[in-house]
Length: 387
Image 1 (cartoon, rainbow, N blue to C red):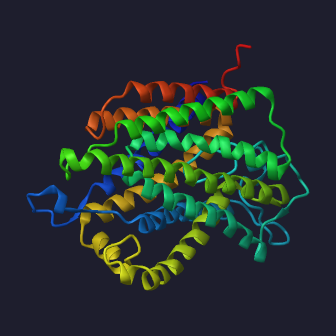
Image 2: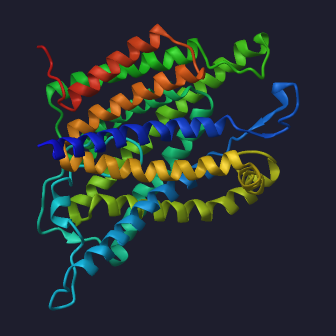
Image 3: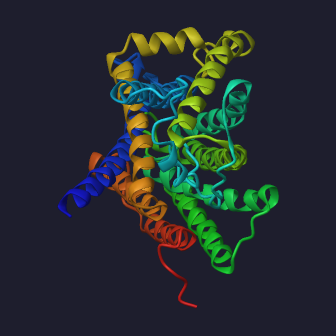
């Protein structure tokens, strides 16, 4: 008995810590000075703001899942005798069928309805693997928008706003997958909308403090940036929800282990970003030096600043481990456990940000977060409606 309990505790703690570190490390990277760092005037210092390169880092982290899967497969094949026809099944494929409802994502909860287990589903091989390019593209667009939004919001508000994905996923699952929402789900989605709205307003009413600006300049400019950050993070959830729906469509028709799906999305996403970087530089970056799409400037900022490239490595590792722990929690515990742990992750990010002095305490944010959590718990059947 103690062994399974210890195993569950390790998985839960691993998911909680790696998920918390992922958001905090990304925000920490945004705060790194990469130019004019010795200038006494903070407004003249240049911070690391390269959302495209950060998205590439995220996809590299996902690719590590694919590498781990194949390494595990090699060990499995070497430890067991080969079949008569030389064919070896994907390791643990049968047990992965039990968590087919856990649509793999990078850093958000799967909120679409469970996928029915279809033993007749064919494996995703050959040209069919290109289907994974579609959710990878949605992941690319959503993550890049969220990375930009994180520049203008606090880490906790950013994480709380991501809870809006449950609303878009619920709506899209009805529109495109033919799902039906029960009464408690409709009520919970309404509560999530209210909670997210309050959290967003808290970021606009009390925008993050920018030490590089005077109090007068901060008044209007920071409110605009805070509003922009909220809009970008919320808008990104549309792409994330689309990613969930496309992933479910694929898993309905093909047998695909979740860890392999994460790795494939990472591979296709990384290839797309690397192809887009030179195109964006030629079309936009050259005429806007130092912008998000100035590829040479972004690359130099990474390689010439140890704090930046070291943080990138940590982010890659945290993303890979977060996916592993998240999928393992769903397999050995439940999807409800994963939903609960992910909510605790938001709380840990908030507490860490307050302890680090990155933000100030806000009762408005507390109220919004409480409503958001309650609505999410109802949607994931952690608690029931009292009526």
